[in-house]
Amino acid sequence: MKIKEEEIKKTVRKRYATAARSGQSCCSQSFSCCGSQPELQSEASRVVGYSEEELKAIPPEANLGLGCGNPSALAGLKPGEIVLDLGSGAGIDCFLAAHRVGPTGRVIGVDMTPEMIDRARTNARRGGYSNVEFRLGEIENLPVADSSVDIIISNCVINLSTDKPRVFREAFRVLRPGGRLLVSDLVLTRPLPREISQSIEAYVACVAGALVKEDYLSAIKAAGFKNIEIVTEKNFPPELLVEEPRAHELSQKLSLTLEKLMASLSSVVSLSLRAEKP
Image 1 (spheres, rainbow, N blue to C red):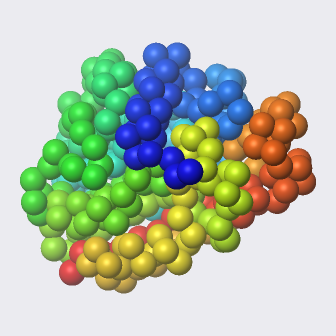
Image 2 (image 1 turned 180 degrees about the vertical axis):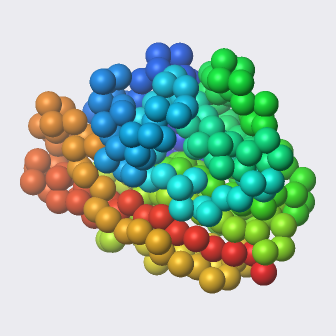
């Protein structure tokens, strides 16, 4: 039976609300987008591409270890540009972008979880980020005007959407002509077994909702983007998706052998890409 869209949204929002309140990973007891323990969050962020200098330059409370890349580092941001972050969470990528665009630039973060917005706004206030704002909204229905931003970034969030083509159409709408899209996300090299693809826990953990890479790229192209370029592509460590102590328990819960579970998770790839709006 296919997972219902509203059930997914409700569960995703609940898990991310828990992450915002606790300051720990968003994910379930079985799956983990990244390290679920506080001491693992910085290490998980370094694994996916953040430098020690970047992590020291932002409020520690902004890093929940939820990303799968470092899109702001690859966006080539310039002073004065307006940046939009899809699924901004506690604000880590917004704050890094804010340093790059400077006081003449502006950064807008959009997230659908009120608790995350509250946490991000608190982080911005404490860090003195006057050029950053956070808006409550869904990335499928962005609370942003047409042709109003220069760059869109997103970090391991679009795979959680139940309507990814619409997300890319919305991104295209709000970008100015010549604007850039820079996304880090999880995609698949091959389809997942049904036991995983129909698991709500796996969906919340950024696994079951991931598209096969070719379908993901096709959705970006269909939205109108040009010059689509894969910047980095690498296997995402399975241990960041499911913690070792829980792997046996999870394989039994999904009626999969441990070997099949881990082999399936090895199909998850962390992808960073650029695209342009003509």
